Each structure stands twice: as structure tokens, then as C-alpha cells.
Image 1 (cartoon, helix red, strand yellow):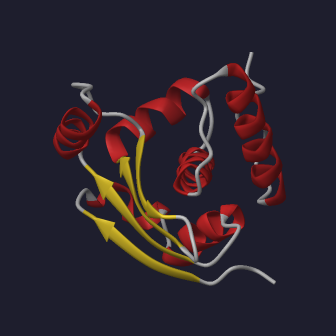
Image 2 (image 1 turned 135 degrees about the vertical axis):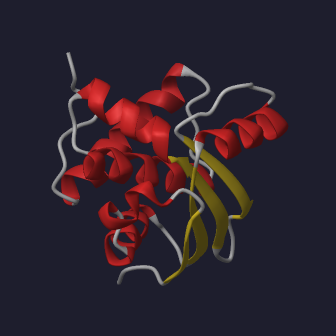
Length: 147
């Protein structure tokens, strides 16, 4: 049985609204959920992405996805913030579709929201393997198999 998901989808940067249908975003997030969740997904511009990354991580640049996890049990409660210009740029650089890159980052962020991390080699290997497995289930290629 798939976990239940209460999804809030917000577009502070609307450039990808057409590419991010609510049901697709919910499917990507739900696939990575291991228990019920309340997750807000916010698509932001470069200024907001940079401000959040600077204020919360001490890094003065916009990054692709930020995960703010508040609870893991009894349900996952988190905010996922994706920076539209960064996601678009990375998708082009990696030669993947915008949808495939968003799917990857939403799966990645949802795993972070549940305590997964990639701070050391062992964690990174496990997390990448899980992402690859989940993305394959969604019909996307291994995001780490690029040469």
C-alpha cells in the first residue's frame, strides 16, 4: 500500500508550472515516501534559492534542491525547495529532460526528508542506489550513469 501524501505545491517562480503537473509531482514524491507524509514543494527563483541556501546552509549560491525536514515519525513532514533556473540549467548540462531532472531532485529531496544523507562515501552509495531504484520504477534512467 502506497503511503498517503498531503502535498502543497507552490510556484514562486512559475516558469515550469506547465512541466510540473500536481499529479506528477505527487507521484515522484510518493514513490520515495516510506511512510505517510505532509510535504510542501516550492519552486523558487534564483534570488530566493540563494537567500535560503545562504541563511540555512551558509552557502552563498542557489542550489538545485533544499530539504527542510521537521518530522520523520509518525509521518514525514518537510518542505522541498527547488530552484527553477538551477534545475533548468543542470538538466541542459546533463542532457536530460526537465521532467527527468525534477523527478530525480524530488526523489532525492524526499529521501533527505526521511533521514537519508550522502555525507560520506557509504551513505552516498546507498542513497544513490536507492534513487536509481526509485527512478527506474518511475521510468527514468539512472541519473548517476552519465559519462
